Length: 129
Image (tube, rainbow, N blue to C red):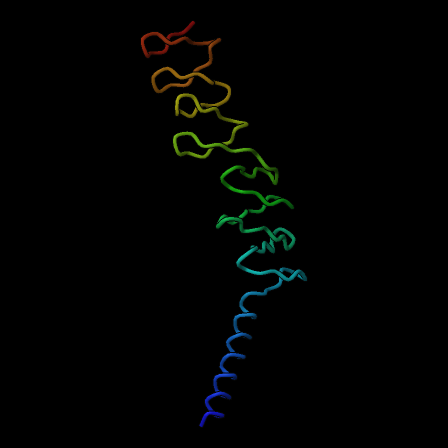
């Protein structure tokens, strides 16, 4: 009886280990990778991007990026920031007093963004120059 129990336990252990190993190791094209450490993007030429501290890095052309710090436009990385909880492209917008404005109009008056060469702010309201 002991031999049968031991043989059964050994068979289950070997089968379980094989199942775990098959789940963990995959291929991205010809590159082996562990699914808990990388994500495969076949549409980007089998690009492998890391998973770091629970963050799944995203593809941008042939690069990988942290979506909290960058965005991707036309397969090029663009720096991003957060403004009052909203993610934005730092090349196109500025954060002024927790208010998001286009970089071409980097000032805030009340809830309006404006350009100093065209407007000024009087008592929280825009006035033309």
